[in-house]
Image 1 (cartoon, rainbow, N blue to C red):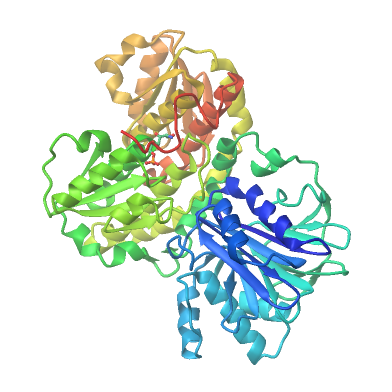
Image 2 (tube, rainbow, N blue to C red):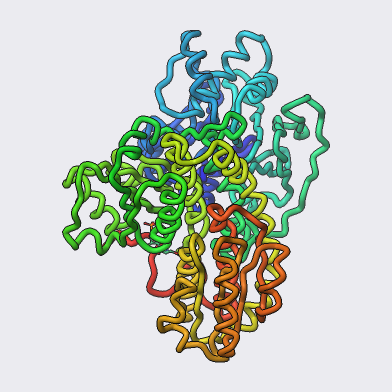
Amino acid sequence: MCGIVGYIGNRDAFPVVLNGLKRLEYRGYDSAGIALYDGTDIQMCKTQGKVADLEAKIQQNMPTKGTLGIGHTRWATHGVPNDVNSHPHYSNSGELVIIHNGIIENYASIKKELKKRGYTFTSDTDTEVLVNLIEDIKINEKVKLGKAVQIALNQVVGAYAIAVFDHNKPDEIVVAKLGSPLAIGIGDDEFFVASDATPFIEFTNNAIYLEDEEMAIVRRGREVKVRKIKGDSVVVPYVQELQLNLEQIEKGGYDHFMLKEIYEQPSVIKDTYRGRLLSDQGIIKLGGLDEYIEKFTNANRIIIVACGTSWHAGLVAEYIFEDLARIPVEVEYASEFRYRNPIITEKDVIIAISQSGETADTLAAIKLAKEKGAFVYGVCNVVGSTISRETHSGSYTHAGPEIGVASTKAFTTQITVLTMIALRLAKVKGTISQSDYMMHLHELETIPAKVEEALKSDENIKKISAVFKDARNFLYLGRGYNFPVALEGALKLKEISYIHAEGYPAAEMKHGPIALIDEQMPVVVIAVNSNHYEKVVSNIEEIKARKGKIIALVSEGDTAVKELADYVMEVPITPEALSPLVTTIPLQLLSYHIAVMLDRNVDQPRNLAKSVTVE
Ligand code: AGP
C-alpha cells in the first residue's frame, strides 16, 4: 500500500516528512518522494528505491527549507516502479503538487480528455491525471484549490487518499479520502496528514480520521474544515485522543501483521476485482488477458506453476478452469517442474502464481517454459517484480504488501484473479450459460461481505484453538474445490504453530490415513454445501467411529454435520466454485490462534522467509 505524509505549521517540514516516510516503510513500497514549499518555489525530489535512497538524493541536490511539505512511499499499481512514476506529481503548470494512495479506475478516459485540451503527461500514473484534472477545473471554473479538488473527485471512480497543495496558496493542504485511510494530526498551530498516525504520534496524539467521501482543508492558524465531497455538507470532525503506540499503529491495532492481513481480506478482494468485475454490464476486464485471450482459448492445456500457498491457489484454479472453462489444467510444483524435463509445446499456456514475484523456483520454471516456446501468464502481487517482468503478460492481485510470512490475503486475492480469468474464458468459449455466468459475477461481488461474516466466528475459533493447541498432529480433509483448502489449512498450521498437519482428499482416508485416527487426532473436515456433501458426512462418521475429534467447517444452517462433529465452524453459503474464498478464513484464524497460544513468532516463524529467492 502507498503511504502519504504531509506537514504544515511552524517547524521545518523536511525532517517531519522524511521521518514520517520512514515510519510508513512497514507498509511496503518501491519508490519514495518529497515536495517542499521553500517560501518561493516548490522543491521536489523522488526516486525508485528506499527512503534512504531518497534522503541521499535530496542531500545532493535539493534545498530543504520550508514549513510546508508532502511525502509519499509508492506501492505501484499503475505504471512500473521508476523515478518518473514516483510521487509527488506536478500539474502541467507546476503550481499544484499531489500525492495519492489508491487507484483511479477511470483515469484513462480522463487522461484522453485532458490530452485533447493540451495537457501533457510525463508518467504512466493515474495520479498525474488527477492533479491535472484538478488544475483544469481550477482554471476553467475559476475556483480555489479546495473547490477544484471537490469537483474533480466527483468525476473520478476508484479509491484515494490524497494530499495536494497550491504554490500560490502555501498556507494550506487539501486532503480527501475514499477507500484508502487518511489521518489528520492536530498540533499547536500545526497539522500533519498521513496514511496512519505513525508519522505524527510523537508530535500529537490528537487525530481526526476522515471517513469515506470526506475532504478537509488544513490551514495554518485555522481550525480543520471537513466536508462531504458529494453534497458539500459540513462535517463536525471527531477528534480522537490516540492511546496506541507506534508498533500497534503499524499493525492497525492488531497484535500481528498476519491477523491484520486476515482481516484485510474483504477490502483487498474488493480492490482486486474493482474496475475489472463489471457485473451490471456482465463483463470482466483484465487488461493483461484481453490481448492474449486466443492463447488461452486455443491452448491444449494450462500448466500452473507455483510454490506453497500459491501452489494451493493453483489447485483451486484447476477445479475452476476445468469446471467452468473446460480447459485441461495441470498444476505443478515449480521446484519439480523445472528439473523434470517436462514436455512443453507452443500450444501450452503457463500460469505462474507468486505473491512476491521473486520465488526462485517459480522464476526458473517460467524461464524453462519460455525456452520451450510456451506463453507465460503471471498472477503476482508485487508490481514490477522479477516474475511480473519475465512473463509475457499477467494480472496483478491488489492485496497490498503482505508482511506476515504466512500467506493469507495473497491466497484469496490470487483465487479472485484466477476466478475472473476462468469466467472470462468460459464466457468466450461458451462453456458456461449466461445465467450461470451472471450468477458467478454477482456472487463474486458478495464475497467481501461473506468473508466479513466468516471473520465474525473469530471468538468461537479461538475457543476451539484453546482445546487443540497441544495436539501433536492434525488432519485436514476436504473434497473437490475444498481439497486444496484442506492442504492450505494444514500448511498454515504447520508453518506458524510448528504442529505437524496433513491435508488430504477426504475420500483418501480409507487408503491409509484412517489408521492414524484415534482420540488424540483432531480432524478438520471441510463439509460445506457441495455436490460431495453426503460423502463428506460419511467420512465424518468413519472418523467418529474411530474416536477421532472432529472439527467441522460447515455452511450456515447446517444440521446433519452439527450432530456428528465435536466442534463446528460456520461460513456463509456460497456457490461451490467460490467456496474456497470463504472456507479458508476459519482455517487461517485456527492456525493463528493456536500459534499465538503456543507463543510462536507468528509473523516471522522459525526457518522461514517471506520470499524464497534461492533454491
Ligand atoms: C505460505 O504461507 C508460505 N509463506 C509460502 O509457502 C509461500 O506461499 C511460497 O514461498 C510462495 O511464495 P510466492 O507466492 O511469493 O511465490
